[in-house]
Length: 74
Image (cartoon, rainbow, N blue to C red; front, side, top):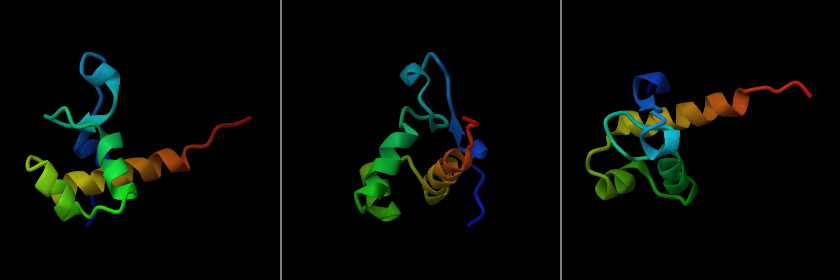
């Protein structure tokens, strides 16, 4: 699945103090990544949050990948 996180994730300083979240929801990316890190699969996450879909969950992983590739010169 080729998903671009920018299609599914946004940040607004007036919502969740600017934390990245799934567009159109108040579900933060960090929450979804936490569920995945705890071993839950996308179907289990969708059962917990029926407004989510597989593309949005994949977008969270794509977002995390982009953050992990970010380089800071020291």
